[in-house]
Length: 457
Image (cartoon, rainbow, N blue to C red):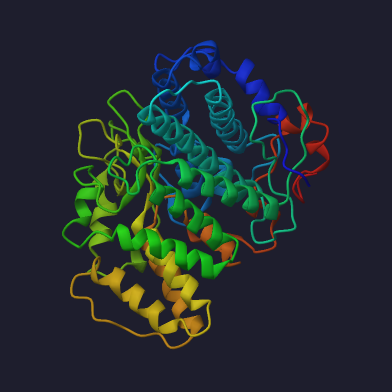
């Protein structure tokens, strides 16, 4: 299938009908003004960033996975995710679909309008390229999340998502294949690397070349191109080492940007990522599952950093998820750390385990991470791929918990997903392992209406 050139029906409607898009952002300028200067285009980029949200991904993946249980004040939040009972017409996926495509549409509009901007000086030309590189990066990030949620990313021949790089509305597009989506994403990110001005994330609130490479490494990894996943992740990790055991706690309270490759930085009145789990009034929405708590080594510093004991609004003891709590009076207000060096190390380790002769380095990388997370860690060697993969499963669960990875990892590994508290298991052949295309999209787009994911017809 060729690269599609128009935004899909629901996203097009979102730009004209949804309440949140009818508002005129104070940090964004209109299309008629974008072409006037580099500075106004930069304002438009900030507007695109203001629409981007990692909270949607974190909330969905946490509640779909086996790492949370419902809290006492949940009130039915994310119930369809938690019980895997969503359908085309019910569930959180419709908002996720339209939100992500809304960001993509705004990024495409910016990129299209950038061709009208006159950059007279070398400095302006460099700034213009950097703005476009940021827009391409952000567009790619949300496209890949759409692929992960709505596609069987393990099967390259299966349906991916409709992919467009132009702000054209009202066409009814079909779905590109997963392989085509991988190809377009890697091509675009290579372009982003060529345009972005910063080699490394000096200001990780904007994309750098290393941030774009980190996203490329993640895509190569999902595509099972382990050689390129390893090489790309290594390039990033060599320039951006992981945090030490003493530096690590400061990352989570925004007192350090060590190993944070890209984040959406939040201010006082922005969304609060940590509120996916509990609120200022101690209302408990979701707690840590006993399974993940029990899986930690007692000497692992991450356990106390990510999960603690507290009382909810009704004075009931709860296991609070505090990874995104932050350090201010506004509970949950933190910068959204969307790419980190620790993920690059874990990609390298798993990639090496899948490459001939790679077990030695794979073990070395795993020990390197654990030394910087577990007090008194003594190096261990796992001789078989099966033993090592069990440890990678465990280590990704610990290091990347509540960062949007667990749900996708269990699908990547074709493992069942079990929630002991509600006695439910999502088997590897259950169609609920992939989100349905939302009913609103099917009704507005006759082409994609024929391409719904299996099981949802």
